[in-house]
Image (cartoon, rainbow, N blue to C red; front, side, top):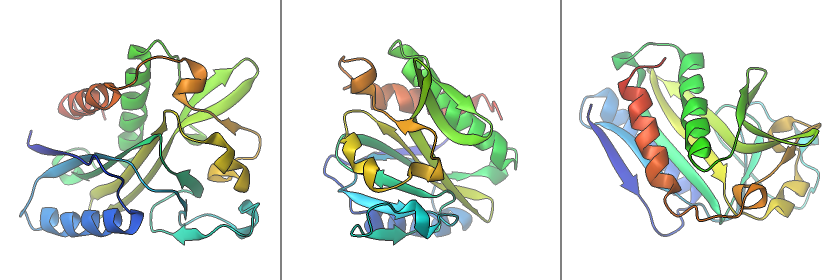
Length: 209
């Protein structure tokens, strides 16, 4: 399996990342490049997927950057790991729901390594953590599929500023909160990206979808 692994040390501007992925998608569709997994961090930004609604913006002073991914409004910023990908589903099963399940499994497997029990919810895409009686999102997923190539990706909250989410209804879900790994369990997460990539490639290789 030929997958390029790309890691960016400096924060990447959101629009630059989208442009890069769309160019990569075009190259991949013409067999000019390989699948891609890209680990990065964004500068502060609020983005709105194709199904977001204006009433999900609680602080009208913030700027929402509209994007063509699936999903609603979310926040990206320092302390959050972004995993983008450009993956050709024609080489695998053409099943978007199962591909989402694979991503959720990849995140859950990674958090399990750190002793954190998380779960997926069929009705609400993403990965969740149960904090006593409260359910909080720990990882958000937003995907677009073009020519059976899946791109965009997911984010995992590590030690980001959770107050930023007060400006929006994250992912359009009112009755659940948002948390990060540092709040759940303070430990060293420096190797998280390595474990995440290993699990992602393993799940793709094993074709668990």
